[in-house]
Length: 378
Image 1 (cartoon, rainbow, N blue to C red):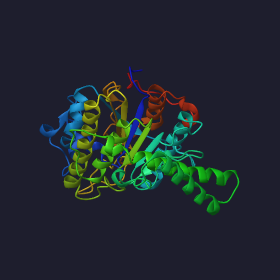
Image 2: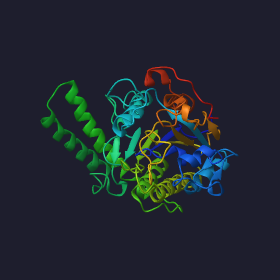
Image 3: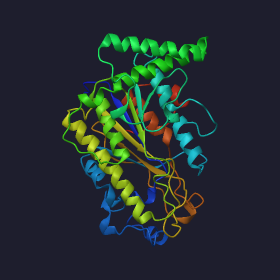
Image 4: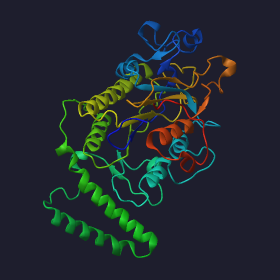
């Protein structure tokens, strides 16, 4: 796989709101693109060309620089069977890897259970943001979910290992009367204790961290910085997750202004994360997945775009074999999916590749089937 010093780590960046795939990786030499996008089109001279057909949006320059270094796989035409243009349901499908029915366990939650079957590490997975994404949830799995790492941890004012252990024991006993008894309640009590232990450990990450990288002051960039802090603290965390606020890329109007600002923020955060890892000689240990729930309509609505189908995803890291994967969907009217880019590769193939070739797990039990893999992991 790679010559990793540590176990491979997956960072997932959920770009909520459904970014406009057509203006993310742009078919700048296709005359149909201009026809569909008279207002929102990006002029060819401004596109960051991959080849003579497609290129990155100009606001994605930091990601394009990584692409030019061979560290970015562009997964074109990604999607799932019978596309649904609902944010909630589509994201749920990406989280559970189950397009046909509603299920509880998330794909990463099941992976975490396989990585740490005896729940030996309360920080096998860490999420930054509000709530816990369904992707990380699974029965028997405890995941630390952090709002602000700088102020996280209920035991931060207690010095000394003995006092902290005693406090944790007190907290765990506080759970029991409220929860009751029995196997399910024992699990809930243990989960509460795990969360407290996780909080206690995570609170030490910022004080261990030193870096010359200046991340952006926005919330997403700070969460990405938190990802670096936790990884570099050697807690044994294998899955790190964060997401943009819901609707961040949902540009039904004013897309010309909002879209470049949003992608600029994301691209800078990703570039800063990679630079931070490299500064600490940890860049070979991490692979980053960036995805969104679906694409946008091919035909603009005036100043924005409405919900669509086929999209594009990105996998980034030293272990990545850079380039384009999957086919760019045709813009021919007869080949569109009800006016949308038609997906041509199942997102579970990308998941399978990451699980098997990077994380080192058997993907079939996690995803409930076998899916064609890419070769974007070296």
